[in-house]
Length: 602
Image (cartoon, one colour):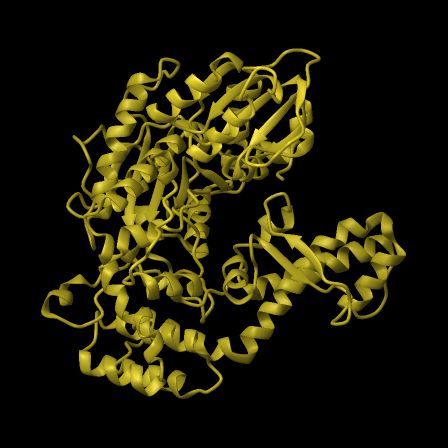
C-alpha cells in the first residue's frame, strides 16, 4: 500500500483520493472509540492499496479488512463499512450478510458506493436489508490513481469494445462508453474540475462520442451535487483522443528507465523479481511504486543516466558507512547487507534498481541496440545527421534478415516502416508477411486499420501525415530522438494553440483557459520557482484504448516545464508493446463473452 506522512502529501492523485475517502467515508461514520470492519470488493481493494496503508486504516478506526465476496465469520457486535462498486455481485454480498436479523453478520452497515447505483440494484438492496443500513452514499471515485499524475480506469476490454468491427454500433460498445464516461466524471469530481471538453476529430469518432457523453454527465453531476461550489466551467481542460492518433509511440523501443523495463522485462502487477545474491540466490520481489523515492527520481531518465547514477549512490552509501572497499559489485553489496543490517534497507532500493538496469542492458546489448537505430530512422524519417531517409525498405531489411530478432521485434519494425510511408501496397505487405514467416500473426499488422491507422496505401492517406514540432535543438541521445506526439499536444493545449477544427469543443466554447499564464511552456523554468500548479490550471488527457509509459513521462515533463499548469494523463489501461500487439491481433475476432465492467449492473 501507499505511504503516509510527508511523502503522501506530495503524491498528487493518490493523496487526493485518500483525502476524499477520509472525508466521504471514514469521517462520515466516525464515532470515538468505536472500531469497525471494512468490506471491500476487488475494485475497492485495489483502490485502497494505491492510496493508503493499513496503519492509515487503523487510524480511522478500522480493525479488520474483509472481502465482501467471501464467506466470513459473523461479528454481530461490530458495525461494518461496505466500500463497494454498485454491481450485482457486490450488492449480493452485502445482502447475504443481512439475510435475517438473527443471522446478521454485523451490528449495522454503512454503505458507500464508488459511483451511481442503478435503481434496480438499489431497490433490491432496499427491500432486502434496509433496516440494517445506517448510511448509503455514492462517493464518486471510480478510477485508480496509478501515479501522482496518472490514472487508469482498469478496463482493458474497452480496447476490444471500442475498436472491434464485430461490436460497431452494438449495445456492448454503448454500455462501455457510458461506463468510461461516468468514470471520467468521477476523476473530474475528485480534482474539483469542471473542464471544457475537447476531442481529436481524427482518426475515428470514438473520441467525439465519448466527449459528448462526458460533457452531458459533467453537467448533470455539477447540477445535482448540492455540496459543490463548482457550477461553471473552471480553469481546466479535458482532451479525449483515440489510440490511433499516435501508433508509433506504442511500439517503439523506449530507452527511458520505466518504459524500457516494462517493455523488456517480465514485470507483472508492477512487481519485479530478481536474485540479489547471484544466479543461485533466493528469488526476491520488489514493487515499483511511488513510495520508493529513488524510483520516482530515476524512472523517467535515460538508461545511460541511470547506469551512471545508481552506482554513484551505492558508493556514496558505502563510503559513508566505511563498510566497503575495492570494486563495487552486486555480490559485494549482498555481503555488505548481511554484515550491516542497520542500513540494509538503505541500499536495498539501489540494489533493486541496479538489477533492473543491468537486466535491461543485457537485453539491449544482445538484440535491441541494433533495432533502435532502425526504429528511430523509420519513425522520424531522418537519420542521426538529420538527413532524410530516402529508402525506408533498405533501412528495414537488415532487421528482417537478422535471425536473432523475435517475431514481435520484426513486426514492430514492419509497422514502423508502414507508418513512415502512411501505408503500403497490398502486394508489398503480402511479401513482407510471407518472407518473415508471420502469416499466423499477420493480424497484428493488418488490424491497425480498425484503429484508423492506414496500412494499405490509398490517395486519401497521403494528406494524413501529421506535422511535428522541430525538436532538433533539444539535447537527446541518438537512439532516443523520437518524442511522443502527445507531448506536442500538451504543449499546444497549454499555450492555447490547438486547432479548433482538429480539436472541436463538445459544447459552446467556454472562456479561453489560461494554461500557461505569460510563460511559454518551452522556456526553461528556474528550479527555485515555487510550484503553484495546485491552484493553477489542470490539463487532463484521456486516451481511449491505453497509454504508454513514454506518454505518462510526457505529463511530468510538461508539468515541470510549465509550473502554472498540471498535466494529468489517463486511459482505460496501461500498455506495453507486446500486450498491444496481442490485443490488436484479436480485435477482429468474435468474442463470446465481452467482459464489460458494467455488465453485472443489468
